[in-house]
Length: 154
Image (cartoon, rainbow, N blue to C red):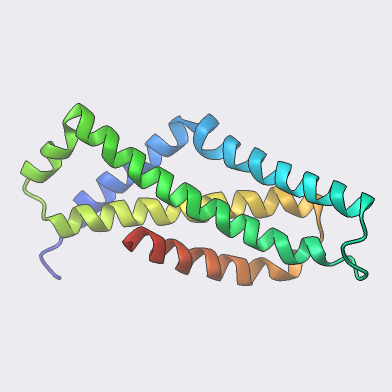
């Protein structure tokens, strides 16, 4: 593993992260809005129908919604990136460059992990204003990180 070019991994990762932030309407705001809509709908249903006696139904469902959003963004980010790279021909440039396929994989993985963690944290921050599930933050971060690794490698 000592033959890895960390400069290449860092460069490709930062380029993918820059792409993620340049299209913030689709990559950041859209998942936040969909998560908030889920929570608002579930909260409205809870107000009209008695789904639970304790009031902790949303605290049970919201972490699953956040993890579902992180998985969706992880699939969406890497698949759209690879499809776009194939369409414009930049993926062939990566393959012809003097970096190994392992370095390309590690750079995509690093960027994708950052994107997933950022999406999860932004959802947690926004939903903390709507709900009181602050005690689940460390568990959510741990779960988001490892699920993101798992779904990226699939």
